[in-house]
Image (tube, rainbow, N blue to C red; front, side, top):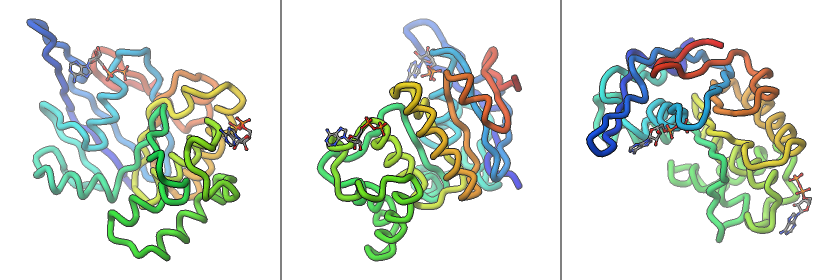
Length: 224
Ligand code: ADP
Ligand code: ADP
């Protein structure tokens, strides 16, 4: 079952008089339950691809389908709703809200979506336990280690049980041992939840653990 599909996606940026073509007829499919690594050098367009796939940016041409729904020409409101329900993002830096506890950071996206507090808290605590940071629930981000912060960010990204997890160098800011540990936890959570995941990483050891590896070449997505 297809979770995410890109068909002939184009994305260009104007840089002064020059036009940068980042995605140039990019085709890609991600099945439910599949994990794919996106391995490419800096500047190749990984963030652009993830943001376009996750409905943060609109393609200049082509189509992005989430759960079979063509999203490129939908209104901003509709795209926001689909993004909130179906997409979880993780970045290199956690972007957790500093004044809220780990627990509250994971509850927030659920409350925004209209879930009750009790339900949101139960789900948040389950996710914290699953990421093995249950005892850190009441701590604010600044009181957590880098690895713990990223585990909270991953839990937050999947709090609304999205269809697709999009991660941009999720362990890029961690030392190798912590990166490996956090990556294990993320992978276990993704597989446990039956999520589809597209994970940009420079780390070939981590990429090797995914079901498939792709890269960007001349604006197209190719298997490695
Ligand atoms: P990566 O994530 O692989 O490092 P990006 O997708 O961030 O690559 O960027 C790809 C290229 O597009 C880079 O050369 C970057 O400078 C350029 N770029 C990204 N976003 C914009 C933008 N909003 N306006 C102009 N150029 C951009
Ligand atoms: P990890 O390998 O998960 O990144 P660390 O080895 O960096 O963990 O941290 C070890 C322990 O110290 C963790 O339980 C972490 O929560 C705790 N810790 C790290 N920084 C702080 C801090 N600023 N305040 C409170 N506890 C901290």
